[in-house]
Figure 1 (cartoon, helix red, strand yellow):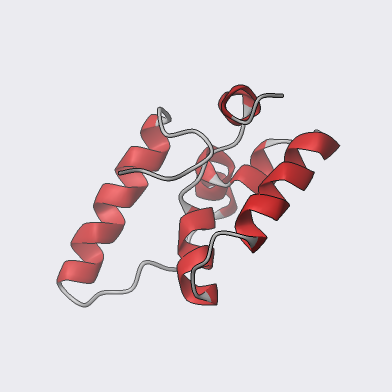
Figure 2 (figure 1 turned 180 degrees about the vertical axis):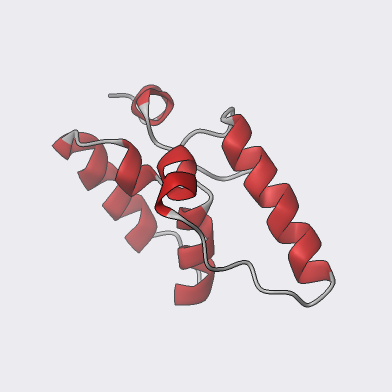
Length: 88
């Protein structure tokens, strides 16, 4: 199951598939470029304070290790889809 701010975002799906392939063969999933991050990173996709507050709260309460949180955030997309998904 895909847990992210905008699960319907194709960039998120591509990044997750790529990251899974990389990890299966023991290769790193970092670094990325700012251009890439702008397509799926929720903290870079919105400037709405309410959306950012909700994302921060969700991140802080996700229940994962810091490394897993970092990965989850790197593949999440928050643009307008996140606002809809989060009820804003």
